[in-house]
Structure formats: C-alpha cells, structure tokens
Length: 213
Ligand code: 5GP
Image (cartoon, protein in one colour):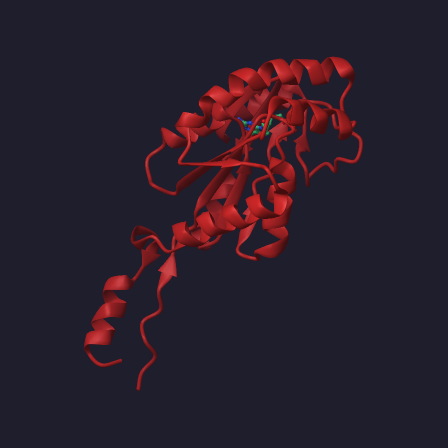
C-alpha cells in the first residue's frame, strides 16, 4: 500500500505580551526549552544591554541610527517605542521560520501586537499574561534586581495602562503559577496547530482515505 499523503502545516506566530515583570520571559524560556518546533523572534532594540543579557540571543542591541535605517528600508514587521527606547521585529527571520512550517514566539508589547494583527493572514495567535496583583508585579520587578528604583517605579506606572490592552488579545492567562501558565500556553499552541486552516493537504489526505489508503 502506498504512503498516505503527508499533512504539512503553516507555522503559528505566537505573541506573548504582559506588563514588564509579569513572568512572560520565564514562560517563554520554558516553552522554547520544551518544544523543538518553536523558536524565538530576536528583536532589535536601542535600549542598553542589561547585566546577564547576551547580544544576539536576548536582543540584537543597536543604535538609533541603524534602527532608523532599518525602519526606512522597511525591514521591520513591526516596531514601537517602549519606555523611551525603540524595539522592533526584523521581518526576514520570521518569514524563514513560518515557511519551514515551524512556529515563532514573540515577546512584544501591545503596540507591536496591534501592528501584527493589522497584517493579512491568520497566522497570529496572541496571549496576554496578567499579574495576579500589582503588589506581586512590583515584588517581581524589585527582586529581579535588573533595574534601578526609578526604572521600577516608571514600569509600575506604565503597567496600569498596559493591562487595559488585554481585550485586544485572543487568550488571557493570569500568571498565578509559572508551571501552570506554561501548561496553559502549551495547550493553546497545541490546539492552534490543529486548526483546520493551518493544516496543508487535508483534502488530499482525506481523498487517500476514501481510496482505502
Ligand atoms: P524589556 O526592556 O523589559 O526587555 O522590554 C520592554 C518591553 O518591550 C516588553 O514589554 C517587551 O515585550 C517589549 N518588546 C520587546 N521587543 C519588542 C519588539 O520587537 N517590538 C515591540 N513592539 N515590543 C517589544
């Protein structure tokens, strides 16, 4: 008997957004470590590198001049100003990943998500992570000790505005517990991969079934 027709799939663009400190970086790392079929979109940013961050892995750190050059050449899928710095997603690596039938994970803010959702196609799946409380958020920002007290208070002020954008996302997770939130993101990804529109060649597959394959 001949091999059944293979079912391929289009990759998912999975966006995770949250106020800074709500746990999305930790959740993203776990997802990437557990799943070989998804990779991270590495953003460009004009913000200075934090202690422990690796250029080319956490971000591609650049200056305003180069960032503007990339904007003018339309090399970004989306870009935005967040906390006085610019952040953007280079388009070329995203296309490469999606074409290869793999998924790509974005850690971008609500402005970037709005820009992606305005683009044609239904590859986008967006998740907003909410902190269990503002007190919890402040505690996480203080204990990760990456930013000055001034930066932390600025981020807390911004968080109050950012959470109002939850309604623009497909899914909402309140991050009470990291392992539980990772399981929820994994469940969303599994379900979205199985959406009929994302599976290529179903018609041929079913035709094969009807022919007794
Ligand atoms: P951080 O400076 O803490 O790494 O990131 C600050 C914010 O910028 C986070 O909310 C993060 O999701 C967002 N961000 C990071 N990269 C991008 C990007 O490429 N585009 C947009 N729009 N936001 C980004």
